[in-house]
Image (cartoon, rainbow, N blue to C red; front, side, top):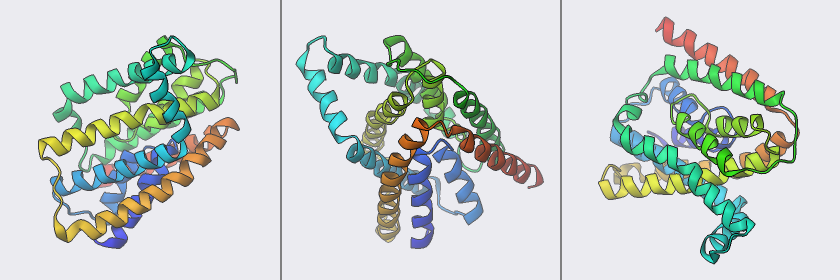
Length: 264
């Protein structure tokens, strides 16, 4: 992998992690288009690094909210901050269970499964279209909501299903305020990303070769900067009910991916 390819993939990851168009799906498509010849270990390492970059951009954007979550969690008082912290934890459980119990099965869905990516992008398009037509409310995330949103996040571990698209759409369809939905969606994934990185580091699955450090670093910086821009942009778009645009985009890209897979 050269530096230019790493930067392109980093920008794609940074933008699509927050925009509801599936970062994993777009990375798979980009690797297929760019002819990525990385061995699985190198590809996994680069993907983990890019997710780490977008997690850091989330922390920068939501640093005040994250500080409140930690304060609330260790105050042990049944106040709004403590309840919100518990909801974040509850929302993580489905993805943790699926990730631990079905890790090998999930990994088998990656690595050039373009037809699957295309079909899942069409599903994402449908979710976004339904959410865009939902009525706006001022409802907050409840404990039962956090479980359902967490299940959506677990399903979105499949390539082609947008994690932010699935969780935000589910939240909006449950009647949750759009700004709160976006905020909850972005915050709930941060602990999972750091947990996955920690697991991969401890298990020795990551493979940092000296020859790849410059491309990996370039991809990290590109993903971080693109993530900062996309996160702010997405919050504004969700508030203005512009999800239908992304629905159309996912439908077009999904259809192209399906066509590409069938012809090849």
